[in-house]
Image (cartoon, rainbow, N blue to C red; front, side, top):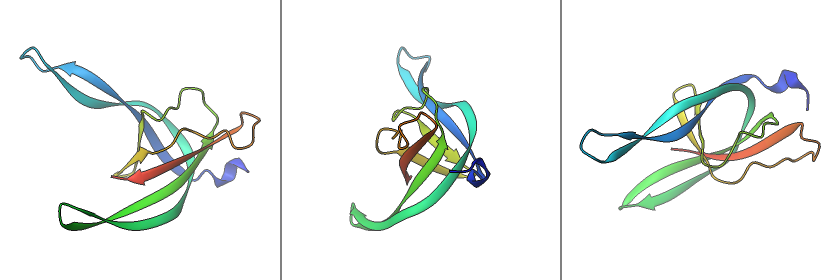
Length: 105
């Protein structure tokens, strides 16, 4: 893959626990790092949750290889929030590119 195909700007976020002031914690998302990516739609499926039809879009994201990317992160693409649904795939086995399967929240 050529680096020129990484046309989209994305931000990886990690979930952190912050004290809520009442002895408990609340979960918040914090920006970890930005990156360039290739984003391809791969599937769109309807699901029925609580008697409501919802459209779920899935995408394949390709980024440069990083050891810091994990399934516990989420991705912000413009105003769209994407959840990583499978472990990152080192698809060329050369530690050059990672593929991520994500779903739109």
